[in-house]
Every structure is written in C-alpha cells, then in structure tokens.
Image (cartoon, rainbow, N blue to C red; front, side):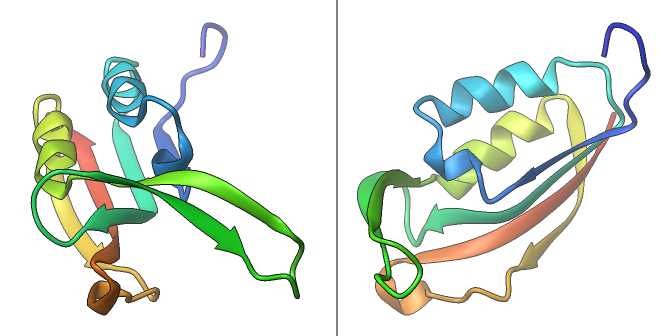
Length: 110
C-alpha cells in the first residue's frame, strides 16, 4: 500500500479465524482505502461472541480449527466509525438454526 493505491479490501471467510478479529478490523479500517467488503463472515445469533471449534469433514481432510461466532453489532459498530454500510447481505451459508449465521457487509468510507 506504500507504493500503490488500493481501492478496497476484501475479507472473505477469514475474520472469524483470526486470534484478534476486532483489533484486525480496527487496524484495517484505519488504512486508506475506499471500500470494505466482508464476505462469508460467521456471526452469533444473539449478542456477544462465542469461541468454538470447526471440524473439517474427513472427506475433505482431517482437521479442526478454533473460530469465533462474532458479535454482529460489535463488528458493524466498529466499521461504522469510518465507513457507511451500504448493504448487509445474507450469505448462501445459512445455519441460523445452529446458533450462528453468515453475512456479508459492503461499506464505503465516509
């Protein structure tokens, strides 16, 4: 970014796997780009967040990963400090019956 202008940042299905997702998002929002797109981000159905384990089906490969069901209001509040949220879309992955849901957020710098 020091040498080239970046118009936007795409964060797709990664935020929930980071050890400090809110700190990462805050740091990214401070960078000079105009658009932010979060895609396939897992949120908890309800307030707060929850740390859980994601098990990969053996048919893909044998593994498990720690991940978070993020707090949707906390994420949107953090984004809204620097960006206008243009749209929030439901992801094709719908697991709300399991206590979480996936959503995408599209935002433009204020």
